[in-house]
Image (cartoon, rainbow, N blue to C red; front, side):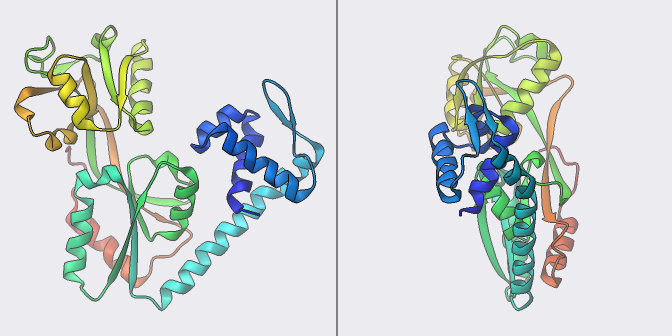
Length: 298
């Protein structure tokens, strides 16, 4: 049986909703349903009682749930131990980061370390938003660079590397362009463009909720340049991390406005507490601490 099916089973057993579970797992309802059906076929038992609104565990499903957490914990521990044993004879450092981390000099940091230690082999992986992949890379990589700690288990050691600020991007002739800072509540009636990245959406929506309103989002986009070009032409204001402006070739056409109080988040280096650092890992950890200066607002 695919071990990830068990993880999906656990999420569904806790949410009792295919819709909610599939959203948490970043998969479709139909995919989740097929995986659960495969489990039931392989085990020979029905695990859930289905209704139009929610699903409930059968008695057999309850038995599986009692043992499932232990099964997953044993599997994850075994994976960590295997990786530790394999790394003893290896002169390799494994690092992973999300695509957004390239904006914060993470890749330069890794490559400069490589230049100083050419005898060390470095494996680089990119983290997607899929919890299944994050679970895997969480055990596989020596170090992970990320900004959203909620994606990872509680068994990680985190080192803050830098601080980023979420700001308003607007055209130079827009009403807010002359302000250095504005209160978030000023945007209550504004049409906005937000990134598709869920972490940034959750951060911004959370702050808007505190300010007493729900933002009017006109567009979600994966591409910052699209958002900036639209903001430049007064289609709507864009909400993005400040550092993203460096990627836009017409920066003189845009203004960035901070919020009061500021909306910030940190960029971290993470490693597993259960996986003791090798001598190479310790060397890299010391290198990162020496060459980063927190909190540095990007």
